[in-house]
Length: 184
Image (cartoon, rainbow, N blue to C red):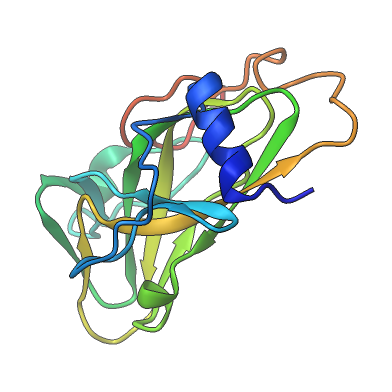
């Protein structure tokens, strides 16, 4: 069952599911964030890891090197054409055992050729969510820190899983800030 604003708000308050939690949708002169009718629009923090190939780095998920990124703390991030940047949510998430979360991009960014990718948040996962922004255009693209980046949809699970993310000691548990790929 997809959770509505009232139920998401209850979980945020009683289980600290989203911290900080914005009770209403902030949307004046910004890219919106906060609680919406059937989801929560999360903000992107001000730390970005921008892909660059100055050192001819190879992206290898089993042997990842930070040489392919430059790190910037800024109010807005410029992503080069046909490139990407990593960032994380301002919000820290603690997903209950009976909830599963999917993330979708914001239409404002999608209409500019900027795609946001996030894997699902599994039951009992906890941390800042690492976000990937892909600039699919031939032009530089701008991402605004502390504004809306993506929307999380929360689903109540009919039957609780046998093994949660916490139970199996998932490698991205309790991540703080932008987290790069890990194999263990």
